[in-house]
Each structure stands twice: as structure tokens, then as C-alpha cells.
Length: 553
Image 1 (cartoon, helix red, strand yellow):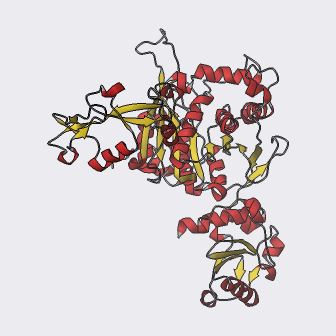
Image 2: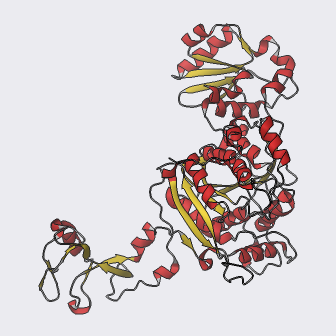
Image 3: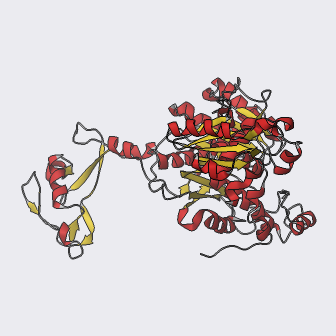
């Protein structure tokens, strides 16, 4: 498969693995009706570090990812500031910022910015999940190659064209642009079939001219595009029940086998016109059946279906009750709602977790809450925004949408869509050096969640991980009991209490084997050899060196 090379790629190739883990810390003063560990989240942080923070709880759980990264038009003046651990890379970044249209390496920097984020987004995406990325022509071709390399070209789903504006601009020198791209990829072939709700306009084509008790229907041709010679197994005589005439098509086969044709007769699904006036039969397709099955989505979203950026601006102004609110080209909620429905069309459920790590004005949360209000769904959102407006615009919009905007014209917005979110920032990083020196000892639950993911690939929220007995049991699954001897106290970590000794190992072994399990014990040290521990069904992992065990194994 062809791959895309760009300046800095060798330095950021594995950068997502070295990003320090920083646990999420909630801010009650900025949260809105916070609702426990499964609450919606708004995170103010650099999105690369925030994505790493989400892994222990959300890896392989996100059904729908939507991101709207910088389009890199040359007019945005965004700064690439990831702390890549390479002196050459850091020098290059210092000497070549900000990114503007005079920068001959702006595409390289954009790709360096996207590469590690896409890797972490892939880890968060569920096997039956879909990721959507808004982009324009400046980076669309580069993004496709990047996605092919990270997600696999076999997992490309569609390049959706979105009509983001109605009118044309006569200020344009060559072409007036009316569309943007939304690139869609799946994580695996677990997404093999997508159907979405039917458009009401399609339903208007159905009628019930013969008063069929099954309701409205449309008919489709019974004649196969293939010739008789091409499909001889589909060549047979049919009978017009009104005239009793025996009918053969002169050149083409039928679409269905004889046994299926006979089934259609029994189910009264063949339409021959009023009084048998049609030359060939047609198949009746009922609206109630079509609604259950849904329709296949198309890769064109016109403005009347998905909204425009002008509509997005008006929505934002309506929420803030101000025409002076400044935000460039916010996306309309209808666009995001359409994308969420496509993702749900792959899984068939309305309980998706939707992640937006370039949250901007908060449209994704607004769209999620709107869909929940409409159909009673239980969707959750996670927003990440690094800019200062994360609180004053992103979160404030969601607060208003939840609680209601008293003077809004829209009745739903005026009443409020309901819901909640927890506002978060990132805590201090969990790193080997800080733990060894005692300068940065994370809380028990945060370290437990991170270790579970890093060493065992298990995603569990920190809120659910507390010691359950004196030997440090903090999590169990069908095969393994997980123990950790740890307190965020350097004195404890240097004491015999924090060591795995024979007596404790025997208790752990007996408890686990009674349930047909093995045990993993995280601790600062041990007073018993691994050979004996292996015989007991115990694997020992030394703190803090096991922090990167999963990636180094």
C-alpha cells in the first residue's frame, strides 16, 4: 500500500505512545447537573493529552467520533506545539511557527499534528464504530492517505460531500466553493451494513391504490436487467391472475426464482395494474417494512438536509441571544445529527458515546442532546477543547441548551433539552520518575485505571476501582483478579506493607483459585520468587516500572 511521507514523521511516528497519562479531574463549579461516572464530559485540555486520559475508561467503546480539525487554509494562524521528544523536531517547530500561508512546511506540520491524535482516536473507537472528519480541499488528499495508513484503506467508508453554503461568492477568482468533505472510516469490518431512517419525502411516494390492509406501498419492476441467456435459472412462465394469460418476457429473465415468485403469489405481493392492465408484474414493497429496514445513506448531504455554516451561526446566536457572538463557521446541528444516525445505522442502537476532540462551539453536544430529546435515546457526548473559550463558549452553550434559553424562538430550546455534563481538566502526569522520587504520586484509583489499560488492555473508569480487601483486590473479570499494593505515600511504598510476601501471596492464590482464576499483583517489590508465584497462579508486576509494560511486551 502506498504511504505518505512528510517532514517530521520519523519523530512523531510513535509519539502517541510516549504522551504522559494525566488523569481527569472534575471541576464541580463548571459542571452542569453532574451525574456520576457515566456522565457526559467536557474536557478543557490539549486534545492529545485528553485522548490519552480517556483510554483507561473508553478504549474500544466510542461508537461515533466526529472531529473538525484546522483546515490549514493558511489563514488560521494555528500553532503546532506538541512536545515531541526529539531535539531536531523541537528545533524545527520553534523555528517554523505559527502556521500560515507563507509557510512552505505547513502541510508537514498539519500532518505531524494529526498523526498521533488519529492513532489515539483509533484506540478509542469501538470495533463497530465510525469516525467522521470534516475537511476541505487543502488537506483532504493528505488526510485520506493518513487515514489509509492508520485505519487501513479497506476501512474507508465514504467521502461525504456536504453543501455548506447556498449562494456563490463572486469574490472568488476561479470557482466559488459550496461544499466541504466529511471523510468516514470504520475501525473494522464489524461495520458491514449501514441503514438510516427514511426521509419523509420518500414516504410521500407511497400510496394504497388497491386498499391493501397492509398499508401504503410502491412497486418495483419484476424484470431482471440480465438477459435470458445470462440467467437461465430465472426464466419461467408467469400467469396474469386477472386475464389468466401466460406471460413470458421475450428477452429478459425475472429478478426472482420460481419458488420466490410462488411465495409472492401466496403473499399477494404482485401488482398487475388495475384489472390486470400491466404487461408484466411488479413487486409491492410496503412502507411499514421499509421503515423497519431503513435506507442506505448516500455520500451527498445537501444543505436542506444537513444545514449550512450560516445556519450554524444562527443557532449559536440563538443560544447566546446575541448577534455579536464571534465564532468562525460553526457547524449546524443537522450535519452532526445526520452523522450520528449513520454511525448508529451500523450498530442499530441509540446509546452511542459520541466523541468530539476538536469541540469548538459545542455543536456535537447540542446535536446529541437534541437527538435524545427527539427519540428518547441514551446517547452520551465527550467534548475536548483546548482554547480559553472551552468554558465561556463550548460549555456555556451546552449549559444553556440543557437548562433552556428563556427568550429563544424555538420551543425546544426555550424549554431546554435536559441532560448534564461534568467539566474536567487534567491532573498531574503519571510518570516513572515522579513516582520514584515521590514528587508525583497519583491517587490509587487513577493509577489502577491506567495500569489496567496499559498492562492488560482492560478499560475501566477510575471511579469504579477502589481496594476491596486488605490484600489490594481492586478489579476482577472472568479470568483474572487484579491486586495493587499502593498508597500515594512514599513512606508506605518504602515499607514492608507494600511488599508482596508469602503469606499475602498464599491468601491471594487461594481466593483466586477458588473462583477458577489467576491473579495479577502490582506492587513496589516482593519477598517471594516468581517461580513460586507462577505455581500459585500469580503474576507479579513491579511498580512503577510496569507503567509501560503493555507497549514494551
